[in-house]
Amino acid sequence: MRDKLFGTDGLRGRVNEYPMTPDIALKLGMAVGQKFRNGTRRHKVIIGKDTRLSGYVFESALTSGLCAIGLDVYLVGPMPTPAISFLTRNMRADLGVVISASHNPFHDNGIKFFDRDGFKLPDELENEIAEMTLSQNPVWDLPAPDRVGRASRVVDSRGRYIVYLQHTFPRKLTLNGMKIVLDCAHGAAYSVSPLVFEELGAEVITIGISPNGVNINEGCGSLYPDVVAAKVREVGADIGLALDGDADRLIVVDEQGKVLDGDQIMALCAQDMLEQGTLPGGLLVSTVMSNMALEIFMQSHGGRLLRTPVGDRYVVEAMRREGALLGGEQSGHLIFMEHSTTGDGTLAALQLLRIMVEKNRPLSLLAHLIEPFPQVMVNVRLERKVPFEDLPEVGRAVAAVEAELKGRGRVLLRYSGTEPKARVMVEGEDRPRVEQYANDIAAVLERSLR
Image (cartoon, rainbow, N blue to C red; front, side):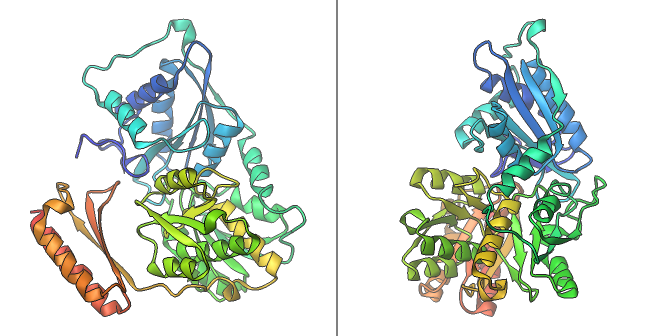
């Protein structure tokens, strides 16, 4: 699998192991810079990162590659992934770069790109960049010595992003009197998101705002919503918000300490937009991982759910193609296309808080609109990826389970885009049976891939 550089969300891996090595990052900077350089004018690149210790390594390597190929680099330091998307647009840059491995532990890191309009790069362009990066005999169009790039720090990036976020919340509303528990996962949002809510009037109780380079996502953030839930119950908060390491996803806890995933948040936001007539065509876009209950909910409210492959950029691509304004993933990526071009956990929280303030009702009475079907995921580690259609024994196992489910459940097989794993997901009404089905299919898959 060494010939594959990009996964479903950019480049990602363990630090100082292929492909997350300084030499790859240097060549990647040169390749993407050469791809985006156009003519003789100066070009601008924004680089942000999360709080991982290794961020310094890849920030320096990418900066060297980009400057060598003739692009000017603007460094903003630790900032959420969606902030880089915004700043790329706001500062009229040609390219945005994020150094982050999202919800992964500190020993991993990653690199992803945004175009000048703030959208993640399509597969075709990523493949061209990967080919240049991995070429044994690359042809670099290096500029003259007086045309190499400069690097500088941007000092007001945090303020720009905070103001932008606050403008997505209606000016006539405030968060006065609201108590919020906010977990920033010791990640990129630690110095930004608390201020957003505080300046709108909320009392904010913070968790995970003391990054030290190695504690990002460690026992906190969106992967550990029980931490927020416990604090919500302890302090009597109105809502709990859990971000991941790069703050592009959100998991929510209501005032009773019950956890809401992305599907449940999307159901509430879709219902609100349907009521206001602001959901074009009644369309909600999500991935194949979203629960059947969300699909049934949309149909019962006169809307529809369009599914995409896993990955928020595929959701965004479908939204752009279909003219949709709301999309997301069960994992907590939520895209409000009226305001943003990518998933933004803090922005999504503001949209949810707007609904609570406007309706003047607690979240527990607003958000539990769907009862998710039991959904079981089993991971199978592998050394090679074979198209599932080329594994007849697996096909027969899936067909047998689907026959048992009788249309009241689903089976989904997919390969991870970031790890050497196959994922077996089974959904149905009876959890013990669903668990057995998932384990049975996983066992067949494991045998077939030996």
